Structures are given as structure tokens and as C-alpha cells.
View: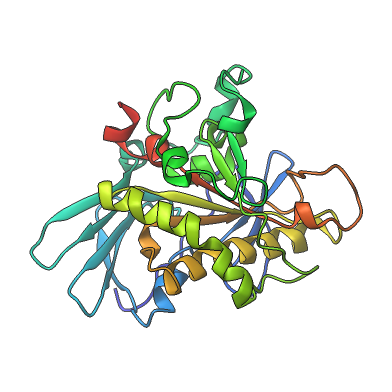
Length: 299
């Protein structure tokens, strides 16, 4: 292909507005989401993708780095990621995530559905302190040990990246670290360098996890307070998640392909207030490998 593909909107979603920076506001069942090309973090490293057309309206995207490592992503007609792999110069492949059901052709009556709707309400069987960590209140916590812990409930099947992004019920199966040492200014996604240094312990833990298993995937979630419009907050929160992912790559060397980012705006307030609140302007990290990778989900 001589240019980037244009993907169709997933059935059931409505296109609310197109924003700058390649982000699109979409709506599904009265819920509003921000959708973006997460691969932009690869482009900023100076590597431009090549695209190949595959049968079944699929597209293969290949990004080759200077060291010969290739990041290979296969998407369906809607831009959903079917599989992402890292292939080294010898041809050895590490599959980061794979959603085989996205390979199948879907009929005209297909519509996206939140997989969490099929599950009962979650009953947390572990203490909250073993489920959520605040980096401010738990600075000496063993973050590696925490990230290595299994899901807090059974994983029924392998989920796609977009299912995890758009379903709070599915994401909540995994423990989370709230990076409340990163204090964003109102309306800003910039991270001062003195605050970037506070990510060191978490970054070291992620590196340790990846040394044990280079196929791990981490979800970086962005959040805002309730000041501003829903749509502007979605865009802002998405930029905040991307900012943290960039720092983890550029400062601490976490491979960009081992992270996915998503903004949630003001939907999940930590402190219930309509006013400006620093605690709500936050970023969260989860290890989501057991949700998106077949081998991991069976462990």
C-alpha cells in the first residue's frame, strides 16, 4: 500500500467529532470514547510504517527499527488490532497480544458489545491495598511483586485490546497503580522533568517484569477532573496517558510496543467533586497481559 489505510467505524459506534492529533470522539450506547492511533509513539521515534493489504480487508503494518527489530501489527477493517508481534533480526517472534475472533468476517447485523455486560458484578476477594497502589502513599512498595500478581478474578477468555480499553468491567480484573506523584496542571498534559523522575521505581518494576517475559502488555490510563466539557476532557486524558508512556520509553527505555494508552476523561473520578481536583488529574497503570494474550490467560 502506498499510504496509510482509512479504517471504517466499528458497527454500533457513531462518529461524534474529529479532533486534531488524530483523535476521534465516538459514541456507543450513550457512552462517549476517544479513539486514537496508539502507534504514533513509534512514529515519533523516527520510524515510519509500511502497510500491506491482506485478504479479508485486513492490513499488516510493519515498523522496522535501526537494529533490525520489526513491530508487526495486523488490523481488521475497523482498525481493531488482531495481533501485534515483535520480530528480532534473526526472525524470532514474540507475540504481544492476539485476538483470534477478530479474524472472522462479521455479518451486516454485527454490533460491538461491551463484554463486561455478560459478567456479574465483581466481588473483590483481596484487600483494597492489594488491588490499588498510590505511589505517594506507598513509595516503598515492591511494585514488581505487585505487578506480577494474577487477576483478582477468573479471566473467561482472551479479550481484544479495544475490548479492554472500552470495558471498565474487564479492566477491573487487573490490579492498578495510581501514579499520583505526577500532578498535572489544569488543562495540561505536560510532565515536568522533576516529576518524571518519580516514575523510576515503577519503571524499574516494569523493566523487571519485561526481563522475565518480554511479551507483557501494560495499559496506561489517563484521567481528568470534572472541569471542562466531556469531549475536551477525553482528549486531555488521552494526551496525559500518552505523555506518561512517552516518558517511560524516552527516559526509562520501556519499549513503546509493550504499552497501550487510553484516556477516560472525567468518567472515573477518584474524588467525587465537580470542581478542580488534583487527585482526579491522574494516570494509572495496569498489567493487562492475562486479558489479551492466550497463553497468559490460561495461567
